[in-house]
Amino acid sequence: MVQIILNKIVFILFFMSLLNVIRHSFLFTINLIDSKKYVLERDTLFYLGLSISMLLTSIINGIKII
Image (cartoon, rainbow, N blue to C red; front, top):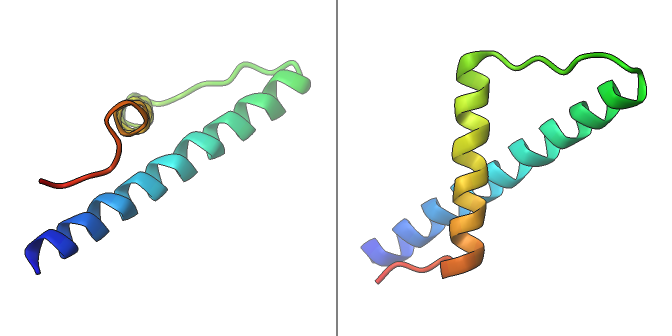
């Protein structure tokens, strides 16, 4: 029972991380087309880094709870 709940929580975090990376990629592309500088605040950059690391870890190890 606990394993099922943890799997769902990890999947939700994975999905939210994916949305965060897609959002920043989209905003970066928009600013690149408009020749503007894309500025990230310190906390936003931290969350983006966490999202990218979550995605890469999930790709390498897979989403699983032992």
